[in-house]
Image (cartoon, rainbow, N blue to C red):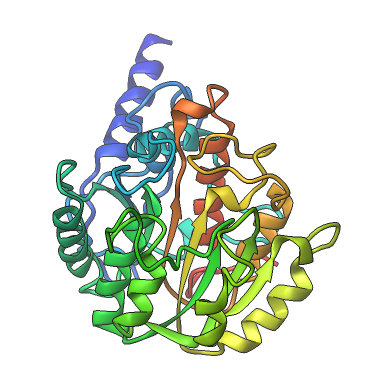
Length: 342
């Protein structure tokens, strides 16, 4: 019995720490998450879903990556701990999406590549290193699935994405439009990324949809910038008491075949479902609607995605991080090339 156990442990450790190698698709053996049948879920290295850890994206079709910053926040901090807590919670996420039939780990080579290096004392410099880091991540076509970090990170990520793919369409799920010109006189903050992205031509503005916006504002024209630039804005009130699947069919038609980026701020969900965030707003989406939005991106040409604004100190239950981990898995399941069993 001891010999059997030792072999199981050795196999589990070897599996999680295996080197990711490029192989021909005819003989490719895909990475798979470390199962709870191989090692207790409270054990193992806390990588995303306990996947193998890679030092680069060589040989990868998609990757999980963290950006641990919170010095772009305007209210409650703590999102620098988001990537770590999301990874810890992700041990509960299994490898097959039973609801949709998606089998991403039988379709794509995926690994966790760790965190991008960031300067926690200088936000503009952190954005520079994020942009440079993501330019390397996507250089070979690997699709990054990013755990934040506050929403500032989407700006430099989009700089890198647009540098490879040109202006992209955007599915932006959020309680806030994040299109302020400045915050406390600064151009770079978690409330400004999409204003900067428009100014720099990173977005195909006729293919941008913002879903879940709500809360009090600074004027009745708070969304004027987005509307003037061709965004489709779907306030939370238009989402109440209904399925969002019909909406996503419209969004899919609007975004077409061009490259698409998904940015999901966890505060898009009502704080009843995701209290661990910096700027919560009541009257938000349900976790079910969040799933409908992400699953509705199936068939789009998704070239990258992020899940941001998880602040673990404000949710001691871990529910917010667990929800974030599941949403990142759902994003993986809608990537191009993922096979479905039904």
